[in-house]
Image (cartoon, rainbow, N blue to C red):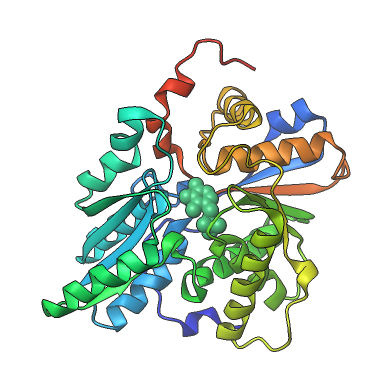
Length: 338
Ligand SMILES: *Cc1c(COP(=O)(O)O)cnc(C)c1O
């Protein structure tokens, strides 16, 4: 594997820190919990999509695109980071939002990431009903733009295709390097998984480097079978892009869908507990849609004795705190103390 063969921009602050969560570790009574601060990638409040965009937008520039199209749910962190990255390299960004979550009122629809989308100069072309075929809607928009003589570059939801997943191959390399520098044996990696590029890239990276670090993706949407299948497919295609021979074993992909609750973006008690614990004992902001549910999964697995006390578990904080401002109704309550 030789990542430098792929075109790549510099959009973020890397490496992101790998730090101990001392208070959380003490509160839970072990294992040793570490956090990889991919919420601190630096691009307009940061997050995991920045890594993917370094490869995706390099490809857009190589194809001489003059406009970037992407899509996401109303409070999409991916859309916000894509608009910011496009602004930095001087490309226009036209985005489509999907009303996947509808019952949270005005602030959810307009504050948080949506506010930043506007500030960063993104053009929200449409705010479509939940369940719309968003890929199809992007293709139609691209076709209209081509007819006007433009050169659109389409980024799939979450930036999750083999090119985008290279960003998390790079993160796997970064983690292994830090592990060596910090004399830290990494026994397990846990993070929130949605559109699959993060986990697919990590699994591809750890596989390609023969490091056998197990990764557990905590699903925020799809049931386990579907999520594992989707991650496996993208990880396999990413390994192919990297030129790594041999089939990826199915067992290399582990997703856990026990913490989704009622659905994408809908709060759960365990998410609220995780959000509050990390805020009040570590000074770290998680988000209600992704990292809060991911951390809820990690905390529950720890309580169930899934890890040995002497193991080192790394939680990848994938970002998302900008979305907190869309959830005022949920968080304002003074009773939130743990
Ligand atoms: C997109 C996102 C994820 C999920 O990453 P995928 O690559 O889509 O699986 C996790 N956390 C946050 C904050 C995100 O924005």
